[in-house]
Structure formats: structure tokens, C-alpha cells
Image 1 (cartoon, rainbow, N blue to C red):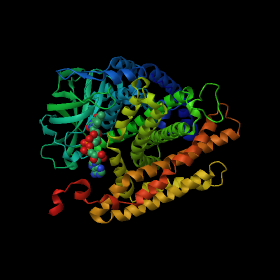
Image 2 (cartoon, rainbow, N blue to C red):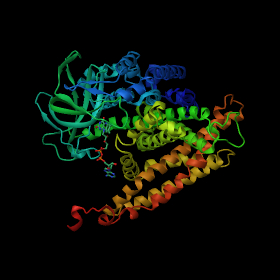
Image 3 (cartoon, helix red, strand yellow):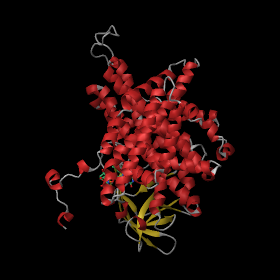
Image 4 (cartoon, protein in one colour):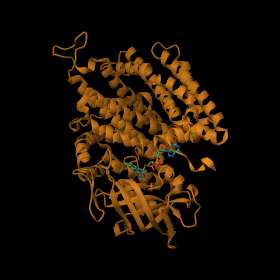
Length: 611
Ligand SMILES: Cc1cc2nc3c(=O)[nH]c(=O)nc-3n(C[C@H](O)[C@H](O)[C@H](O)COP(=O)(O)OP(=O)(O)OC[C@H]3O[C@@H](n4cnc5c(N)ncnc54)[C@H](O)[C@@H]3O)c2cc1C
């Protein structure tokens, strides 16, 4: 059975030494007035969270995978053994309310802290973590754009965890292209709407863990324009609440079936049939896509955390196995056993260090973003709020895609450390691989994240957000170019940051050449995001190495924690960061080699070929 220990030492390093979070949060009256950003309190909460996650969620991970969710003929869904009881404990302990607004029963803790809780839950049991995860997304959208009436009725229930939430976008013929959705809304004339249509792949769409489920549904109001400009957001509860907030009559939404899937078996992925279900408009008519993005942005960072969490737990288990498993001799030998532990073989060390390097940089990025979200929402200075919002917008697609791609790669490499045993269910490694795969696909595929980054966040903005970040990086690089330990790293980093700028210009120029230009952007986007991701991780590794070296020099490295940081940074810059060189070449290669002859290469001719 795999094990998991929450990486609290590293979390504290990032929180206090890398980000200086307590000082930053103390500039925000929201946290000082609520007394929720005190360093000791935050540390205490994280320790409590680790206890819950390790004790309650880890043991259910395998059960969830093996049992999955079961739907009866009426459309009721039973979650795996222990899931419901663990959720009850979770909400009774107040975890659903952790970073929620105190006006609705929340505790008002920083997003930074809930971000760490989510990472831990994803390591422990990613399928289970999605039930509260989806609720949090629904909370965010409703909190941002819902009417006072809806907020007062629904938010306290979602915050207390009595009711959970979902996000209903996808339809059989409309996934990436939500402009094609067919779910209809008609005005009942009494402030409610009738919602009819089918949504598929709805995570946590039906289950037995809560008294009610609050679906946030994209639908087209009768008479609204085609495409994304005609989509509105509706709240459709499973049970219609009475005025006092208790659960009332059953609404016209039923789970038609559950998907059988590769991983995250413990999470119910539902087909939901809406048949004249009563719904309430959330926000403005035809602004549904904008409103949904509030939810999706939170969910994208959450999905990135799935990659991070699964990478972490897979790495931890691979590390333990590599110390224990003896196989083949190493010269010089390190053991009196007939063979040496595999951890001595350089290729095994490469796999382990890849896990450590991607995971620790991912944690630093996720926590940096989470603190930036706190700043965006609560800093008293408008300029600081805007700066933080820009950074969050720019880095969210990277957090989603780079962290899930690396999380999957780390899960696979950690499985590889186990040799054939990694392929056998008993060790749990193959579950991590299966569970990690979906992060690259949902919440907008990683290809779509790349288009969002390059198209919307960089090119459409004239490169302003990128320049601001690149400026910060360059400044850091220049300040440390003569540093004995990180001088070489910042040199590489500075060059890559400059190259990111020049690659952006090249793609930007190509993009201005009509429809072919759009294909050029499309062809470059995935490699561009990966290049950008390395630049961000490189910046974070260089900073972490600097902090760690200073501590070593000051004689503060009692347990080798800082030495490990310095040496992992060295590995990152020697073995992982150079991927940027290949990526620069493939970005520059553009669309030319992709514009092959359809008939000859794919045996396909499109309808307009002869038009
Ligand atoms: C387990 C699971 C849980 C899910 N949970 C939810 C949920 O809770 N709520 C919800 O609404 N949805 C959910 N989804 C749906 C998920 O978000 C979609 O599957 C995903 O967004 C992709 O849509 P699609 O499957 O229709 O693929 P398609 O949109 O058909 O895409 C197919 C491929 O084409 C690529 N592609 C499409 N357009 C372009 C383009 N312009 N340029 C380049 N490449 C392109 C895509 O990247 C992808 O590789 C879930 C899916 C799964 C499998």
C-alpha cells in the first residue's frame, strides 16, 4: 500500500522564506481584522489539515479506485465505502469553510492555506478531493456574481458543506467549443427559468455525500444569439430549497448514467438530464461564459494542484522503494547484501530527482499564485491588486498545464522506479498514473491552456503582462549574475527570458498574417507554454537555491534541508531546464511541417478542398 506524509517542511519554506507570506498578508486588513493570517495560526491549521488528510483520506484512496461509484435505476449514486463518512468529518471540522467569506459562515483564512490543503488532498485521494473541489468552484462563481437573494440562500449551505456544487458545461457535441451548447433556458415569467438539455462528464454530478447538489449550468436563453455571446449561467438545485433553506421538492434533473473511466474512479462522472428543471439566473443574461470563467480559473489552479499532489505522492513512494529494493551491483558497492539498493544507480537518481525538482517548483508556483490571488482580492492598494491580477491571469494556464503534464510525467517515472512491480495494482503506483492523466484533459485540455496563454494572455495583451514578469526575472538575474552558486543558473535564466521575448515577437509577427497566422499560433502554443513553464520554474529554483545557500553559509542547515534545495536546483538546471533549447527549436519550426498534404498523409480530404 502506498503511503503519504504531507510535505509540511517544504510548505513552510515556501510560505515563510520564499514568499514572506505572513508579512505580505499582514498588509491586508481583511486578514488582520479577521486575525486569520497569523503565522502560528497558519502553521497550526496546516498541521491539523495534514493529520486529517493522512488519517482519513489516504486509507480510502484504494477503496475508491476499486469500488468506484454505483448508480441505481432511479439515478441515485452511492460513493465508495467510507467516502460519505470522511466527508461528514471534513465538513464538521470546518474544512469546507476554510477560505470562505465570513459573511456566509466562512473562516476567512488566506487562499494560500486552502491551496496547501487542496494539494495534500490531491496527494491523498484525488477522486475524493473533487467533491469539495467542485463545490468551491461553485461557491466562487456564486459569490462573485450571484444576486443577494441567491447568495443568502445558497452560500451558507455550500460553505458549511451541507450542499455541494458542480460545474455543468460539457455536452456530447460541445466540449472545447462551448459556443455550440444546446441546453435551453426559457423564462417562466416568475423569476425562474426552465432548463432542458443533457450535460455529460459532470464531476461530482450525483452522489450521496450531501443533502443537496447545486448545479451551475450553462444554457442558452430562448432568443439569445448563437455562439458564446448567447450563453447564460443558471443555478439548478437537485432539490429546490424552501424559503428557510431546508431541502424541498425534487427538481427535474436526474443522473442518466455514470462514465466508466481510466482513473479517479471514486469520483462520480455523471450524465445529467435536465428536463424542464427549475433554474435561477446567475449574473447577467448572455454573460454566462464570463461568469463561468471565474469558476474555471479557480478550477484550473485546482487541476494544477492535482498534478502537483499526485507527483508528490508518487515521488514519495518511489523514493522509499528505491532505498529498499536491492538490485544489481554498483561500483563501489554500498551494501553487504548480494546487490545494492537501486537508489545508487544514476538513472534511478535521475528519475527521483526529476520528481523532486518538478514537485517542489510546482509547489512554489502554486503557493505564489495562491498568495497573488489573496493580494488580488484583498490588498488595499489598487495598483498592487491589479499587478497581482495580471500575474494570476498570465500564470494560471501554466499552473494548469505545466503542473499536470509534469505531474503525469513524475507519476510515470516514479512507477518506472518500481520496475515491473509498478505495473502491479498492489503497489498503488499504477493508480497514481491513471489518476494523474485526467488533469491534462479536463478544465480545458492542456492544448487549450497553451492557446489561452499565447493567444489571449500574451499576444492579445500586446505582451504587457509578459514584459512585466520578464522584467522581474531579468532584474533578479542581473542582481545575481556573479553569485558563486546561482550565477550560472541566472545566466541561463536571463538568456531564456530574453529568448521568450524574441520567440513571442516572432510568433506575434506571424500571427498578423491572417488565417495562416492563427495556425502559426496554434502550432507553437504547446511548446511555448512548456518553454514559459521552465522559465518560471527556473526563476523559482534559482531563488530557492539562493535562500538555501545563505542558510547553509550561516550555519543553519541542521537537517540537510537547504543542501537538498541547492543540489536539486543544480540538477534542475543541468538536466531539466535545457529542454528549453529543444523547445525553442520546435517553436521556431512553426506550422510548416504540420501543413502536410491531407490526402497523402492522413487519407483525408476536407469538404472545402475543392470549393
Ligand atoms: C473525468 C472527466 C471529468 C470531467 N468533468 C467535467 C465537469 O465537471 N464539468 C464539465 O462541464 N466538463 C467536465 N469534463 C469535460 C472536459 O472538460 C472536456 O472533456 C474537455 O474540456 C475537452 O472537451 P472534449 O472532450 O469535448 O474534447 P474536444 O473539444 O472534442 O477536443 C478534442 C481534441 O481536440 C483539441 N482541440 C479542440 N479545439 C482545438 C483548437 N482550436 N486548437 C487546437 N486543438 C483543439 C483538444 O485539445 C483535444 O485534444 C470532464 C471530462 C472528464 C473525462
